[in-house]
Length: 434
Image (cartoon, rainbow, N blue to C red):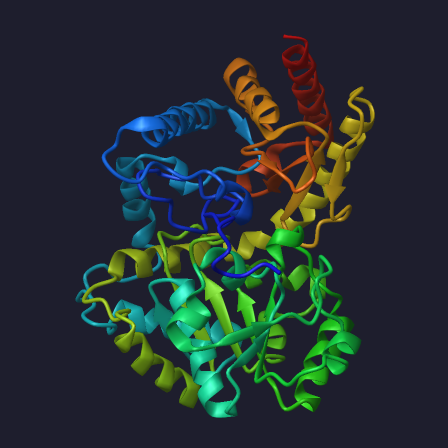
């Protein structure tokens, strides 16, 4: 059973999710329990631990240089840029989304309040509260629901974010206990919820389930699961860090999706590319209580306008583009399958075959170190960065990469993708022969 305090934890795969381990500016794209196997040295900065940390830092600098120097990528994050570049872009875009001559925020008023109202409008909820991190937002949400339901047991997937990436925060800080209605690499079905052998107060559903390949149920399946939870007198909370890009798959609007749950968390820095931050949305009474717990947890910062401003920019710039990213991800995924089929490599798997969002996985029968070297060399030698990071799986000599399609990826044709696969396979075979 995976738990939040499992040592195989990480700052997850797609490069923007978790804070890095001490001493490392970790790539935000790494799948949690895979990257977590590296442990920097503890103590005086000497010895094998310090050398390992130094080596990883050098590899990371090389990766960043290769990505920054590439003329063609499927996705480029602001986290890959320098501080100056990031500030310049925010300054250039900020005036289009907010009156910069208005007063700055203080303890959650001003621009922070405006952002909260914007999120509530977009999701169709009574209210929303801004949080500095999604970990805090969900910790508070689940704590509030435990008090209201009288049941501190939370049903969630063993691959869910709190189980892999939060250092056991639920039991350590809030006295919550987690149970798993399924261990399959998908969200639980209505039958699994109905037949689960013990009561729980809250059902937490991660939409999409990232570690399983950014997978989503059908709309009908999601409705049935929510109904099954209701029949057990449990509330439903959506871990919607990436909820913004789920609408095309479901064929429903964001308010329709959010209306299925009793509360919803959304992130600003993942798909929307903001600096940081999250929001908890739901009934006004719950959000009011959450604000009190936010203060207790230390989340009421004196000023948060840079992050809030970047969130408003993300909502204005990225949210309307997400359906296009999702549609083009299907083109890219199909071209990857075609390219690998003719590459001469033993086998390759694109999962899901038809991506549910603009993110998906690619699996290959090689070690991550070899695949990563091929990826970096491709970026350095051709200016094309097809893959960002590779991670060892639980199966020896089988690795996976997470692929994200955003604005730069829209320029890629299916032929561009197939040509890039051919180059990647060529470099991989050459490295094998060395």
